[in-house]
Image (cartoon, rainbow, N blue to C red; front, top):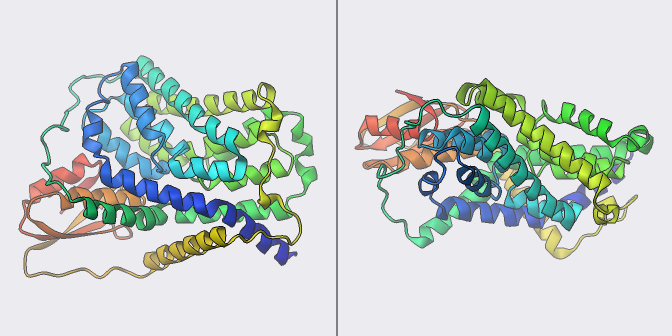
Length: 411
């Protein structure tokens, strides 16, 4: 086994991606800290094409994985967003994100980086309009609670910047770190160990290869950023750019966990339209890439394609890689070491929270509870599915805030 080649391939891929991933984490934090989710919901009511397009445009830059987007979508739904707009948001968000678009450019080039959000937008609009037509809301009384609900004091800019840094480089790393590492490892293994001859048979049958990729991508989970090195490695082994694009779009958007949750919240018909929209859009754009667009647009020029033991170790890229590795290690250590509960002389209660799947879920619950008057401290444990709240507060306001955020809560 050529361990040296394995290590060099991993380092090359990591160095190419790390600057863009860190940039994406920063932008993600700024979006989280400075964009008020409640103000967006008022634009997402109704089944009109405007609400569907707005939901897609809102979702495309947000760097949320398919599990992280679910509580956000449920929250939007409960605050008045239509089923059509929610579906559009669910399709567009996990397929792209500022981090994955930047990383796509770094490894696969500008054409891939441009086509990816365009395909996400088309698929989201198609799926949202289809849900509005064939699985609309049964009642238009969607409990709009986005106006005048939780009055929050204006947070100073410097505190928002701190919150942005914490969310981008702590919470986002917690949420995406595992899947990013998995994607890098799989890409490295494919690059080193999968023989080119394995894909020669499918090289001349792109549609068959696309269907095979869909069958593999739907049950497995990989985030929008983690899918990029895997797609690149498959292209290096002989598969067409269109087939790689199908993996980029289908893998992050649908998995068994999200499908089951959507079936309970959106209904069976809307869930079927959601999955169908993802598959149809991915294959359609994959065929366009292979049969319509110039193939030279999608030629790989990445240093990650380098052979044998040649590694490009630029100082900036290496520094970014070291920072990213340290952030991933910190997230891993934090997930192992249990948090200590802060105790105060005021009332402290532990609430049971159901439905949290990732760090974004935890951050959403924490933010919802912290906005309640009288809450001094709140600590949400993702591993225990609990929220420990201290202060002089109204318990019913805590329960209501968590429910509006899209989660179930009990005392």
